[in-house]
Image (cartoon, rainbow, N blue to C red):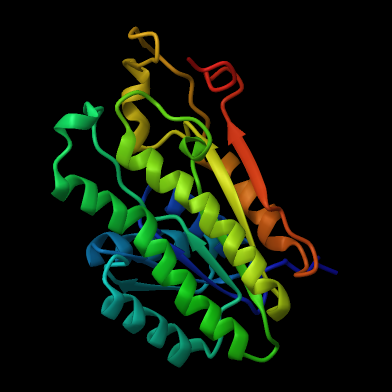
Length: 257
């Protein structure tokens, strides 16, 4: 008799799910039996991901284009999830963006606002909508997993907007875990260090260190991150991984500076 998969009968939503870490998480969730909704701004990227992941896993996926920094777009996204499935069991707040290393005094207000909207406001808006749905559905409750990044713990040089938003994600995670507690809503955070994606491709040629030197940093496959998320998502709602750090063993995080 085949072992039942932990996601069978469950609905998951992954933001930034069309590429990189988000796509890896979406594929792993699909393989684990979840019905997966992936969202992002580029419809064509989402549709390609849905088609390719579905061919690989045989799972059910749905693409819904949305700008998570826009309240109306997020409301429409969750309305579509509610109408299509009637519930949501897992939200993965993964979407985010960054700038090249820029001295703080040179960062424009538009750059600051763009990163704030994508990394923090979007996570808040999606969490807000998920809380409403998870409180009202039957059976009640669900799980929210936030992508914090190791920048939620320690900054890189010239990364003020990204670091500020990721530190704020830690506060959002803890507040969500607290406020969701009476309603069987668990919330945890995964801090990722140097997963191998297009966003981290510069690691192979060297990145600025706190010493002022430029150094190559090791990376790890996205599959390791996805496996960690599957573990967090597979727990019953009376158990929660509040924080988890997954990183390349030799990356210079411990002792950074």
